[in-house]
Amino acid sequence: MNVVTSKTPCCGKEENIRISNGSVSRGYIYAAGSAHFCGMEEYDASDLCILKESESLEIELNGTLLTIRQPNEDIQSELDNA
Image (cartoon, rainbow, N blue to C red; front, top):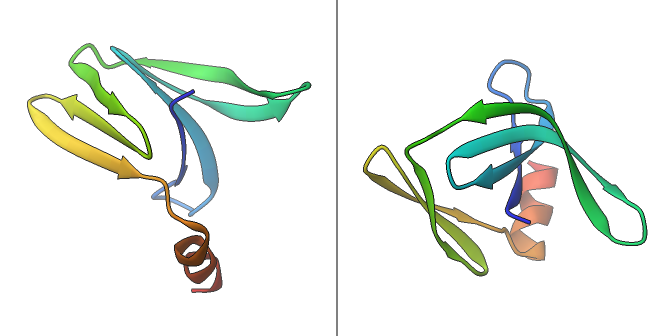
């Protein structure tokens, strides 16, 4: 599904973002038998390309390579308690 959770820089509120080739969507995840993403705002990112999907998401944007890792439970617990 390529959905990541991030915190907004202005207020630290968590939001869900779906990353696709050429676009980024802000929205939310809901369950209707299984998880679904509902995009509320779509942003053009024509230079965005997904290179690899696995335990981490590797993308290229404007010639820069980025890796987004899914934190494991121990790391997530530490982040939540920080």
